[in-house]
Image (cartoon, rainbow, N blue to C red; front, side, top):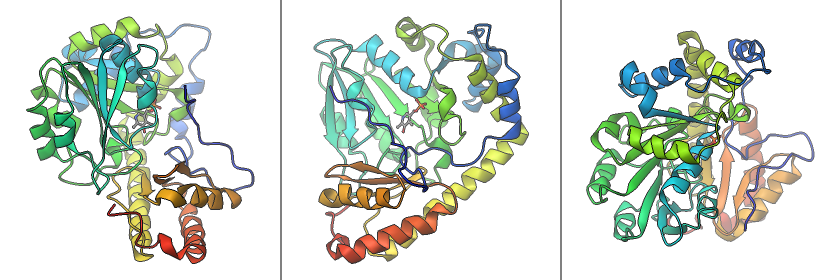
Length: 356
Ligand SMILES: *Cc1c(COP(=O)(O)O)cnc(C)c1O
């Protein structure tokens, strides 16, 4: 069984651009809320204030939010709950590839079979091919928008066409871990489509844009019956009171405006990085998250090694590409410097890498 590979620790001072984290310091009001929360008591599992705040982002009224919003110790834990609840031996779950490295591991414990459909040449979900891949055994379909690691978001029109081909008893999980960074006006947004489909859940997280990766808190929104099933496979009280306090402190209007500034800055850096990389002659797919993807194929591991020698960590998907997170503002010139010297040593990476 392949172990989950976490971004390693740098060998010399540099940047950690391997896990799509928010590089900025924790907001003071969030840090204060965490340290003011006692650790000797169990959290109160209901967390109604947080659930109703999340529900209102999806247009739900507070009375409905308690059952329609599900909290987890990271949205990855909710993915596990959903697969365990829906798919066992002989069942299939379907997703695009390359996509989130956690997906292949989800079915191991329940013995569900992962089925993958290759991305298009533009590194986007091939939703027509995914609909064709649905069988009588398919229980769950995972859609990642924007797609980690490649960057493009799913278009709203394509999503609607896809959903019309999915049987009503197949669960669709729209994993929007990077929703806050999306700027493409054509992109699907969970809050706009959720009410239309009883077999759809939307997953989001406080780990990325909100900068709470280490506290482990994510959420799903969808039909209460789905969460009733997911609760059975979840570990009780996995969401800590500190995570709850941090999430609540992050959604006040003041915190939201501070976070929005961080997000805007990261989006601007992302767009600058994409433009500069394309100017260097590299192929870069649409980047809608806080990361960029270089489909360098056989050169992927050597670019990651070149970064590592300079103390900077990026994520290589061997034989496929390299994902570089958008980090501290100072990391931008360093990323370009390393890539420019890599191109000098390997001129064939320019305009190679297929049609991506
Ligand atoms: C980071 C990430 C997650 C979730 O992370 P958690 O920290 O468990 O909330 C989920 N899906 C994708 C695609 C991600 O990149």
